[in-house]
Each structure stands twice: as C-alpha cells, then as structure tokens.
Image: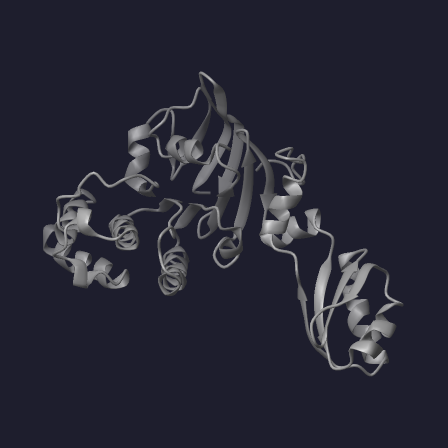
Length: 314
C-alpha cells in the first residue's frame, strides 16, 4: 500500500474538515476522491501531503509516517493543487528547469528531462513564453509537466484536467495511465464524474469530512443503483413482447431500435438475452445506463444526506 490512513481528523473553528477518515491506496491504481464543495477533499490532500497537520489519526504515505516526518513525505509526491502559479515572470523552460533541479535530476539530465516533459504535454512551442502570459489550458499543461518531472511514487492531482480541451484531456488520460502502469499511484479529485470512469480504478466519496462509500465503479453501481440497461434490437415490437416475461421494474421504448429496461436484479440480465433469442430477435447491443453521476445522485438524494457506506470506509 502506498497510503494507509487511519482516523484522520482536522477541525477548523467553524467546521470539522476531516472526521476520522480512513483509506488505503494501492500501488498501480488511480484512486478518485469525490464529493461536493466543502466536503473535505482538498483538506484530505493537504494532510496526506504533510502540508497540514491532522488533529488526530495518522497515515503512512510511501513508507513515511505522516505525523513523525511530514516534510519527508513530500520527497515521494508530485503535487498539483488548483492554486495560482507564483512564478508568472519565469519562462516555461526556466520554470520546468528550476523544478527539475529541485527534484534531484542529475545536472547532465535536466535539459533532456525538461524537453521530454514539454513534448509529453505538447508545450515545447511555448518554452520561451512567460508563465503569466499563458492561457489557462497552457498553464495547466505546464503544471502537469512540472508534476511529471518529479521522481514521485504518488501523484496528488486536484482537478488535473480543468481548462484543458477535449483532445488534450484524452491524451492526458493516456499519459497518466502509462505513469501508473510503471508502479506509481494517483490520488485524483475532480467534479467530472462522467470523465472519471475513463481513468479511476477505485472511488471514495466524502461528505462533511467523512468517507461514506468506497469501491470500484462496478461495485458502487451494483450496490447503489437499480440495474438498468439500454438494448438495441432488430425488432422492437417482438422484443417488447418477449421482455414482458422477464422480471422487471420498468420497460419502455427508446429511440429507433432501442428499448430501456430496469430489472429487479442484475442477475436477471442473462434472462434478457435468453428471451430475445427465444423470440428470434437479434440483440445488437446491451449496455448499462448507470453512471457514476447516478451513484453520486443516489448518495446525495436527500439534499446532502449521504447514505451509510455500503462496504466500510477503507
């Protein structure tokens, strides 16, 4: 485990930002931390990075005990917080060179590593531009280049895709997956739950400083969502008649060739295909229509009244 946190608590004068937070992050995974504004996400990242001391609890991050050696923790981290860059007068190449040297790269390798990072984030053409004159998207890509220059085992990324266009977002997902495949891990926060399904391996939902649900997308959907599917068939009328025999909550027509069915149990999905085969109807596609946004809505269905965690807090 790269992160083992137990009972982390942090209280400010008007709120408890973290309330006995326990979580684990494994090597080689992207771990997503999600919740509404003010839920405690940023405080959690600041505590795990040793920037903010917890009032109670402890964590081992990359083999370092957080409370005993908070400054040593950051030697193993690459950190991207959603904060303004204070080096606006520096050129992009100067900025990245500065951080490459701080990261401990041998002087003879610094230039090569900086060029590698700029090429990876497609910003080499900006190397003579000053940070303060970059667009928000260009600045975000520069910050990601800085993070990837560090010899980190764990990346803490707070809204890493903000202000980045669609093509670059797709490319960045590949960059981060490749980074994780080499044995590192990522703690990732975002407000874009739809996009998260393309990169996050396991999720934790936090509200009012408490972890309220943890699991993979599949585990959380199976626990919290009714099994619903969109089906594409060759004959909607015959398919509708056949599916009436399958135990279901809802059954309706969609667009041309489409049917929506809500089942009583996920195990009934096999009965859908069987019923269509028996009716001599070709099943062209069957896909789940539940998303992580639906999971979030289920967790927050009574305003911000979260459910109890389906599988504990770790």
